[in-house]
Image (cartoon, rainbow, N blue to C red):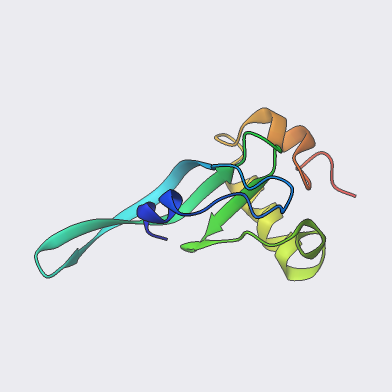
Length: 106
């Protein structure tokens, strides 16, 4: 994911649409025609208004609706993301994240 995308992304919740925050956990630089740009590989996107969190996994911002994040492979991938970065993810997300955290899973 390119860092500049944060300038145009907003919370996908129709009742929110707030500006998002980004915390980068892993990135790398890419050289293109003599210019360097940061590619974000793993990061946490959070909405300070509604409290939702969205992971960036393998360079892709996973910003699906809550119901699609609560099942199947998506849930497994996002749970693995939380496990992988639990030392850096804010405690409130780990404990009672929206739509889920590590200790609030159903």
